[in-house]
Length: 168
Image 1 (cartoon, one colour):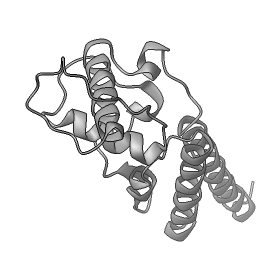
Image 2: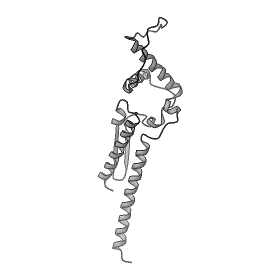
Image 3: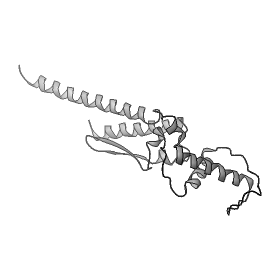
Image 4: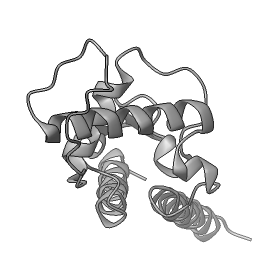
C-alpha cells in the first residue's frame, strides 16, 4: 500500500471524526476539530489532537483537580455553546468582592461557578452517564478495517504473483 493511499485514508478518518464532533454538538469553539492531524509513514497511520484530553469527548471528565481559572473556562464554554443563563438581580446579602456590570454577567458568573464545582467534585455529566462511543470510535474502527483490507489485498496479490511465476 502506498503512502499516498494511507494519507487519503487518514484524511477521510479525520473528516469523519470532525463530522462526529459536529453531529453530537461536541465542538462548541471549533478548536477540537481544528486540532486534529495525522502522521503517516510507509506502514502506519497515527492520528493526533493538539488538545489535551481529547478522549474526554467520548468518556467525559472524571472528578479531580481543575485549573485555577476553571470558572472562566466554563464561562467561555457557556458562551460558545450558546447556553441561555438567567439574569441574577443584585442582592444586598452578597458581600463578595467581585463587582458585576450587569445582572446577566452576575448570572453567568454564578452558573459557571456552580458548573465548575460540580465538574470538579462529581465529574462531567458525560462521565456520570458512563460516556458514549459515537464521536471518534466508529471512524477509527472503520479506518482500521479499511487499512487491514487494503493490506490483505496487497499481500494476496503478491502471493498470486509468486505462484504464477513459479512452475509446479
